[in-house]
Image 1 (cartoon, helix red, strand yellow):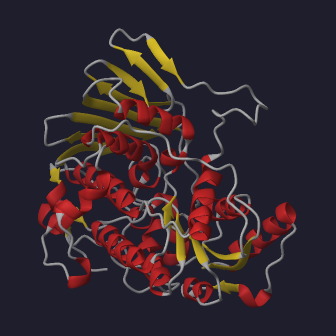
Image 2 (image 1 turned 45 degrees about the vertical axis):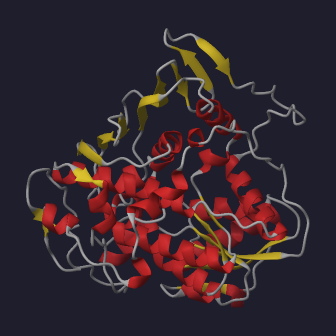
Length: 449
């Protein structure tokens, strides 16, 4: 990748998009209309405990790490007649580990001829006769894999986030428009929108139980993630891929790779995208890669509403999650509580007693629920897609990350037009030029990521 200064011009330069990627702000925002824009009372959609029976759906898994293994099992748990028939990963040991896990947990064996290794393994899985793909590689690769799957007319489950840069996000949106025209389903891995306690809280907020939304306070503080020290025999590429959660070009930094869950929940309540962001961040403890330990972002909306979002990954500190939506009459904890302005709980989600599987308030594992929804849509022909909303949430995290890295305000319009692309254009198990393992300093013209 060409080295460029990490400044506003290089990060946010505006380009004329090709015909396949032309996106207006209006089209990007259109899927985020809040329920409050209509006078009808918001209601919960039906959530099935299991997808209906039907002909066999064959899925191919692309990306056999921990989340890929989990997503494949979640898919198999979503209903009857579901099969994993092909797998692909860059590394042989990842494929072997997944096959052993699937055999142990589900007594399922995948034929050798349907197990693929290498950077082109995703295409071989797509071409193996599957009906849908489960995309769980490091998110840098998501846009290209989504595009290939839709071009091959496959339904898609895509783990969050859907991209690590604006170019990739716009690519996923373009693919989603093509999928819609082909009647293909797309479901992403931001689970809160299919989790019943979050859904019921959102419904109540949309119906005005906290009044007009005037702000939000979103926090995700936790310990450090895993990392891999470099081994002498590893090339640059192998080291980065095996240590992917610590490199921005592969993961998007933890604001995009992990904090997207909370930012997406906030965006769902807001029902709109922010006009700008100003961010702070830094690094004290991370020992590999080029990412930050913490972020603090203020998002500003057209109507003057401001939302504060902060995340930290440092061991030995206070850990907590806060998902507070503030209104003129009270505030909500997005996970299942509503308070008045004095902090008194006026509603709490009625979680049933453990073991009560018949309660109407039972919350199905959202990692399975998203696959139940996807399989149900495929079998009933009622096409679903949350791709556009997830592109918006992904871009929000990228906007915050860029602001923190540069120390400058970043606008939504700049995100829609930025030509920022992270990572190499050619993938080989060798050197990865132009991506030094160094930390960015806000206000300094660092080299490109």
